[in-house]
Length: 134
Figure 1 (cartoon, one colour):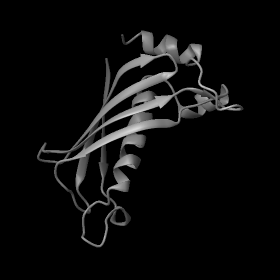
Figure 2 (cartoon, helix red, strand yellow):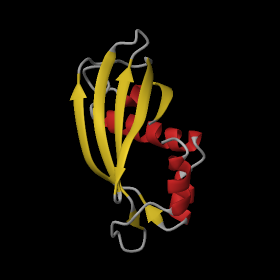
Figure 3 (cartoon, helix red, strand yellow):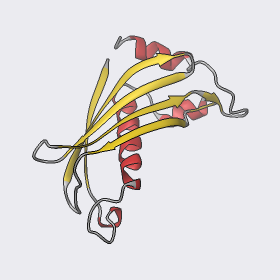
């Protein structure tokens, strides 16, 4: 299993009228953390695109436990938990500075050909890198 920690600070525009992080921003936090995980093992999203592939999200299941506020330092722990055909599965959890669980999310992406958007296997260079960690 591949796991990566990514820290971020809540920006003012990420908050809503109630002063808390708006729910739409969690998807952005998880997106950033996923690509930082990939970058940490030597895969950039631009290299995937240049090879003719995309990785759209096809499912997200999010659970909210606690809220958080402007200027909070957060930690996202992202894990690749499996692959099946063109699909790749992630588990992500978001913690505050007190290590309290704020949010969790199961995310499924699929490799697709850039020109057709048809599902396909991951590019060989991605599979080779991922196999080093399995």
